Length: 420
Image (cartoon, rainbow, N blue to C red; front, side, top):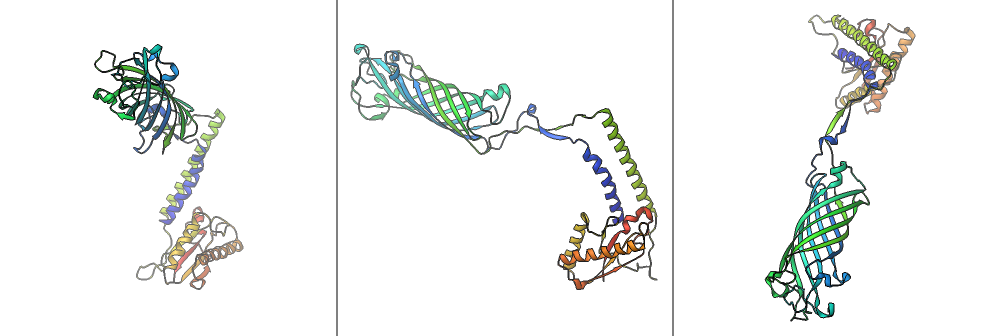
């Protein structure tokens, strides 16, 4: 059985060089097949931004433009579920500034101090919103030009809703200069409002983990800014501009399904003919090895039997093979020697090492030298691995190990190891 395995290895040694010289099929990601969803813990981010907003209720045009700009800031945590769709949610703060007509004490955040507007016809308004916000996000860049990790610029459109809790200064009208208080004007209609928002988040990559954002936002706020139940409009425009940063947590890339990519034919006719000739030559060598294997299987090895029919010698513990005219332990044979050494160290036995060489090549002097050199090499390798020298006896045999003939001469270039 060992002889058959050895010849099979010889067959493979002819085939492998031919296969490795050819172009190989490669496997690449194919974005045209879409992208795979990542794990739930991937593609999370934290986002913080701040800027200004401009209230546009009924009478705000009577306030100076600079005094209408109010601070606006957000803090989000979000997750991308695909290269296109993401969600974010967080906290929102808005400082709302505007104007209403003098004497309209029902107006939200009414203050006639310290300034009056248009000769006293109008007074400032000032109130604050603290809210919870949620947005659905859509990456327009990935949709239009395809997903690209670490792209410098991404345009992200979003829509969402916010629920706000309203705080105004308390105190008797018309001054209203007391401490900030939840539930403006002691009016339950002013204690909470809602808004819908949409915007374009312009994201610029600073590093693989950090982006700089320019957020252009438009809010439509549901609020009775000029007094509830007085016939004034209840939806007010509130555009804003914010700058901020996004920090990406964990893995942020996306993977596409892997597809096999067949190599293109890159050879001239002459090069193609040469490859075909090499394949034909390899097929001839394989056929010759198969013929040798068949003849070896058909030929009966010589065996000296005792009178009771039992083989005269026990099968060797192992056989270490050598290339022609070599005495070094090479390649996989070194693994054989290492394995035999482990067996010997776990047995309380002595061993006989016999050196062999084929008699079909070389001459007697050369073959004797090879037999001695091979058995000495195996003995030294076993000693290096921790086997006591006193347990190893060596000899050479000038005969044939297998007697299969010159076609199988490589099976005779060996060292056999027997238990004593």
